[in-house]
Image 1 (cartoon, rainbow, N blue to C red):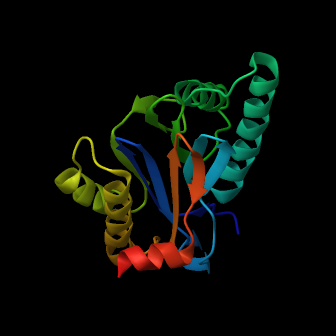
Image 2: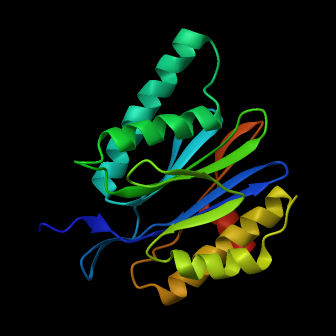
Image 3: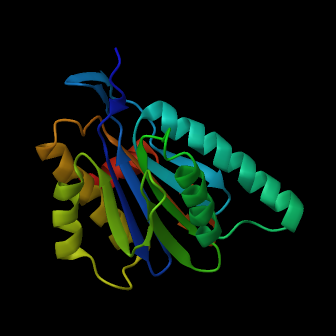
Length: 203
């Protein structure tokens, strides 16, 4: 079993009052589904989050590193790291390991003064975005995002759009499926939505 665990769709959307991250829950090995209950969106700090598409082990390793660095930053500086600083740190880590890379594509999101969203590829390239998607189903998610994203969307509108984008990828991409993890980050902090809350929005 030398193939990496892979295949997913992650989505990020900036709204006027926060930022939304969503991802499916399927993990696959080649053409085989190994799990339908994998978490791909993670808490980094009170107002910071990460979504990862790619190798599950590499994503978890990077999450542990970033959580430790965020805690160390708080201890040294006395305040939370900004979204931009976390994106830069992620970029530096990935670029520094590019010859033995983390196999993943990462969305960095948060609300530190204002909502922010960055996309970081496995070589450390960073792009600031208003909306984005990553993973094997990204083209299907982008078809929804590009058609329906609006500036100054409310958080509720952003949540519904993110779920719609993941649903589109689930229908067309065999590596995407198994339900949805949905996270919002506002000035009040990080929130992971329950299955009941998500189900209510999808009905």
